[in-house]
Length: 177
Image 1 (cartoon, rainbow, N blue to C red):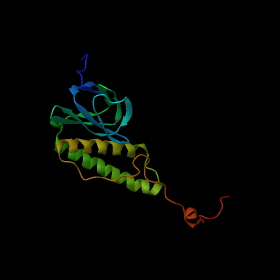
Image 2: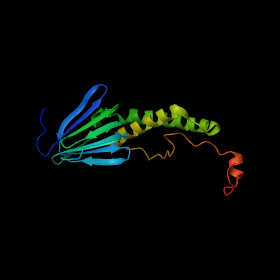
Image 3: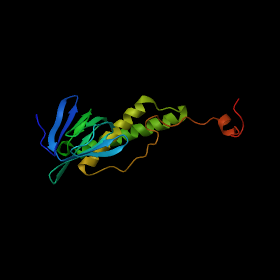
Image 4: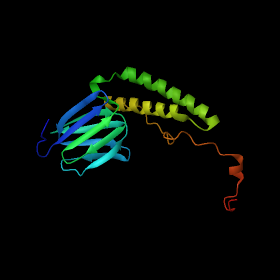
C-alpha cells in the first residue's frame, strides 16, 4: 500500500515470520510497557516498548482485536508499525489447548517459586515461564475467556533475596560502618 488516505492510519504488525497484518484503520490502541495508549490520525511520532496484550483497531464502527507478544511499536501521523515475536487472531485460538498449556506453565512457575524461596533467585527460566504465562493469558482474553488475574510483583527480577538475620537486627538509625 503506497498511500494512506487522509484521516486514516496504516496499521502493520510484523513478526519474524513476516507481515502478519496490514490494514487501513481509523484508530489503534496498543499495550505499551508504561500502559495502554491510543493512536489517531495526526499522532505525534512515538516509539514505545510493547508488552504482551491485545491490540485493538477500529475500521469505521467495527472494532477488531488481536493478541501480540512483547516488542516495539512506532506510531506516527499516518502509520503504526508493531514489531513483535507473537501474533494471533481469535479464530486461530483453541481455548482447550491454551488452558492446558497455561496450567502446565503455572505449575512450573509454582515449582520454581518454591525452589527459589530457598536460594533467593529464580533466574532466566522464571522470566521465560512468566512471559509464556502472559502470552497464554492474552490469547484467552482475546478469545473471551480470560484466566483469573495473577500478581507477580517481582516477575522481571524474580523474588527478592531473603533478609539475613544481621539485616533484621541492625539498628536503622545507627551510622553505617
